[in-house]
Image 1 (cartoon, rainbow, N blue to C red):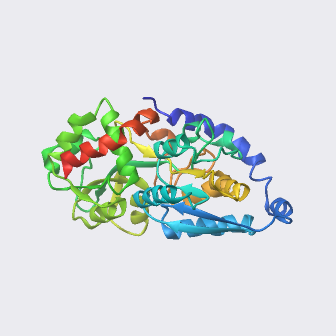
Image 2 (cartoon, rainbow, N blue to C red; image 1 turned 135 degrees about the vertical axis):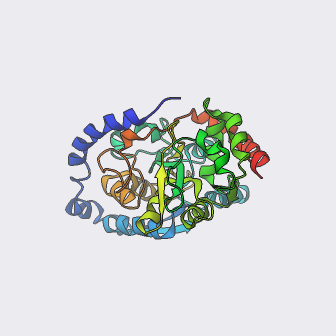
Length: 342
């Protein structure tokens, strides 16, 4: 394991320079010239992004590339993966672009020959830890799973994963179901692979009998309402609820946090490779990443800041396990989680 926060910090300085000569050069006039003669195209996007957020992204993309229509199919990661498997079994995947899940999921799709090799624009400005070295996918957000707590109920929030095993938290915890949430499934494998945590920690946590709900959304709502005042959830939902006035805050555990990068990739079966690549490029551009930050996500490039209320990227310890190990162990990790918690 190694931390990648240093890589992000190092990227920040170079990205500031790159920002001035990349996206800025591709201003509206340049874009209009570049797309004036472009033929209309239509792509289908499968994504787990919340509808309001993906609508905002597509609208901003279409200001740049009005000739490309983006048809969106939105669902949870588990449902998207099931849909993709069903389409593979009966013919070919109907989507052009996938924006969802985690790097191990995309590693599996790449190994099965489902993904097109990308030529991502401005790729040197991105955190190298989220860029597939073989070019089949690129991360678009840093989405850590953290400890969240209700500020009306909890005076001294837990500062580590180990603290959650304290009997004082018995019957007060809530977590998402890894059978439904792709991030939760990924986390189960990372925790089991982490030397400081592993199955002994999961077993101790299960002894506190956390409430298991379907996904991260209901988890954050349970914490905000105080039904279970402490929980394990992705951090951007906590910022969304806090911005809306809910009594909820984030604690980043001292051992480090697992994270998914919500990769984007283009399916090899696409008939619109150029249009699909353009959408992926937009997601990781300065403009696309600025929208990500405005939507409370941590970015994959160092020149767009972090969301209001979030720490600097250099202050967050990110667990960065071997993705091949995580891909190989995720199914067994979910089975272990279910055996312990449900």
